[in-house]
Length: 392
Image (cartoon, rainbow, N blue to C red; front, side, top):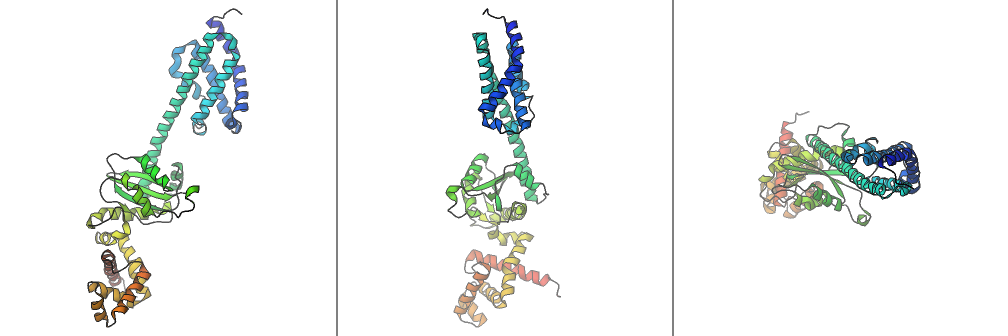
């Protein structure tokens, strides 16, 4: 068979383009399960990409300097959502099948055409990788902006019914209760390391940087098969594991709330605690926001005052005025059992018993120095509220 000129080869390829496209679609259906399982609309879009690849090859063979337009020629034929439904690996499989079909059909056309096919397949593979890299970069920037918006709305408490959908778009895997962790942003923030640590702890995080502050919204995910036998980690333990990802300074964990839509309450407590943490000379890292209730109340935090009243003062007042009076006397007498017993005209063992009952009712132990400060602040705040409350 006499050797064809380039013009004759081009004319021959153009007459074959329809046949090649049909054969390619048939081969895709035979060899790629993911293609067979696609809905008709997406199968059609993939077919357009394959057909565009064949047409683009013919144009490129005519003028190899057209390389920069390969990606636009081939992937421009597909709708934008196809990039989100077809992975890079699947795209490379599509390219391989298409190239194999073309190679099989033009084996008799000579070495020059086969070399052109190999060179073009390399160019189209690199073009595909570039398209997906750009899409991933754009997606990453979009995700970062959306995540910052979500975290900011949680911190301000100004969010609407669209919050769950925005969080879902970020791929949030958390479920159930959440807690907010606030600290100082490091000089070099390693977001990926924070996410890897959270995944290792069966947790997920939303990350936001607010000036010099680093804010993490922490939620638990479904435990892995290896972790099903152990209990879920408390949020304070998760915070300890995430602590190396923060900069120097105080680290405050807000109280646990039932769901992500309630996270603003935990965020307000964590932010208020972070603002006054320096007032506690021996504050651990991380610190629970509820352990900073006295400092927060003195700084004018209404949530801290309400928490002190609802969790300490009112339960004691509702349970027994005897317990409330004993706690007042014990704290006013410098936590001395003997002095408290003398004031109340009871035996010291009676004071011990009442202090134990107080601990059982509210969960705080008045015999500890730090907890005594919390309890005394609660008594002061509660009595002020009682005084200010109008009489019925």
